Image 1: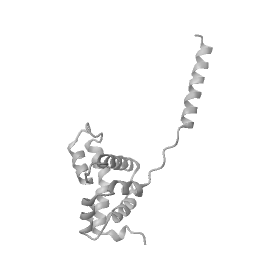
Image 2: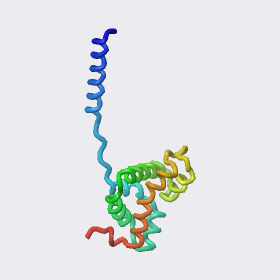
Image 3: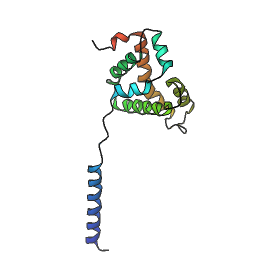
Image 4: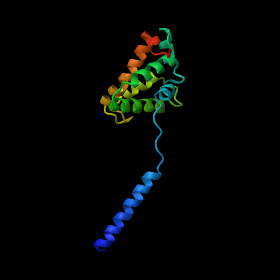
Length: 144
């Protein structure tokens, strides 16, 4: 094959790649409230813990949205990845969010569930902060 054919082939390949990328559907933006609601849906254990302090899952998710808005991009991505993993691991199992957190903590290197200890700590902190804030000051997260 001569240089002319090589350039033509490279040009065709580049064109195909660009058209494939252009036609790929864009991934929808993450909606933090919806993600929080999915993660905590049906978690009676979490509901009971919050209720002891006069809060509910709505307060928790409102606090999460407030806290999420102030996160740096890396922490936001780690948190969203963790929340998706919790949703996946709870689905159809009857596990609580806390049950899943314990499984993830035991998998320190991430070989079982894909979230190593450092990423787990970084992603979990905003969720823990949201729980704490909902339990201690739910009014601060509620819409006025």
